[in-house]
Image 1 (cartoon, helix red, strand yellow):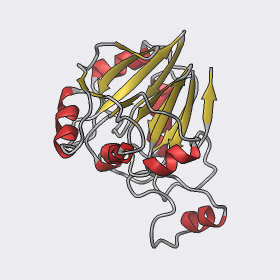
Image 2 (cartoon, helix red, strand yellow):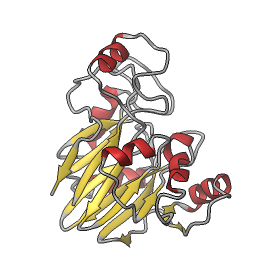
Image 3 (cartoon, helix red, strand yellow):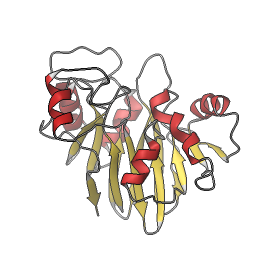
Image 4 (cartoon, helix red, strand yellow):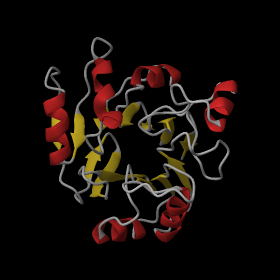
Length: 241
């Protein structure tokens, strides 16, 4: 299994349009970006896309144009699903998987597209293209949001999506009991910032340690997070098992 971070930014991305902060200037000068957060999971010759961000076209081109066989959505915020329309006239539109409430919302918005819809109950593992996926609720008020567990041949990867640290007890117990090899964790801002529906960097680090992840990367980072932070993910970072 191989996982590539297609994007590690928040809804705005970095550099932020029209911003001259130190982080935006430094990343622009270095030709670096944080596109909107999305993950590409490759198992043998199949590809699962987690989140279809507004940057999807650019992300797929950077990843050498893989054929996407399935898409999973964590929730109905535009930066996590709206790029699905980029599949139009590029490839056969892939089937989408999400918790029922998430699927209903995204499907209504994407009413102009015809695609397979697979509502998946939370906490119920399902097989997808050689992996086992489990959706679990997190806490991203007011929008119903799920994280994911991805299991393949003894390797377990978790993705919290957008969330505060106080996720439901059942979800926290699931993570703690899963022997997580790698966790992708929401870390939108540096320590000292209080973002009501996200974790800051310090909270994300504590969360990763609390659930017992062997390794972790912060994603969904805003332009407030300077480049080079320990355990911060970067666009096109790849992990192989």
